Image (cartoon, rainbow, N blue to C red; front, side, top):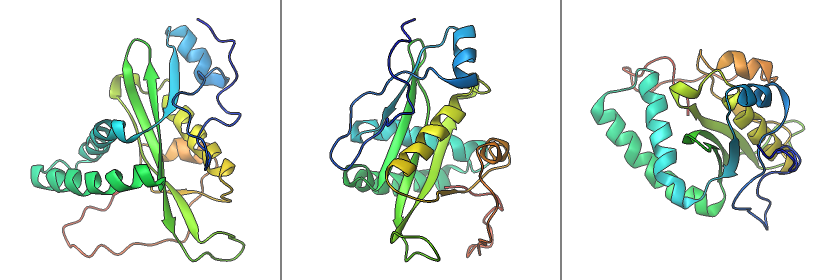
Length: 202
């Protein structure tokens, strides 16, 4: 495999003036060693509007795995999510990453939503980033792919000048997020629908 290119984590994603179509291969850390062992060759790239159906597929699969598999609820989720991403991707208020394997195609992805926020304390910008939609196909888990996606999203947030990033953690994702330095905060939630389940992300 050709692994002589620049490392992924220098400055991989879009700035205000540039969104490259492709990104260098992941060649660093524990995950890279695992990919060599299993003969994986993976590329992370930024999403475009052409990836909308893939993003929605990952989002629906993620909710199904959390037990949110009611057909009517999924249909509503697909409709609302499609409406959001059709606007957010072109406008830049959603920045997504997809992981592609030479032999497996797109096997996972994730993204950052930028939402207006009045700021607090030392926060210097009237917006905040939220990571969501981190998903890897079942047969490609435990290989470091989710970690690579997360590290890329975190670095993108840093490159855009954000001083923190938040997410909602499922029980299965929490160990990885804690390893990456995420800590619980004082946020709480009131579900206005009495039938809403307790674990909801994104």
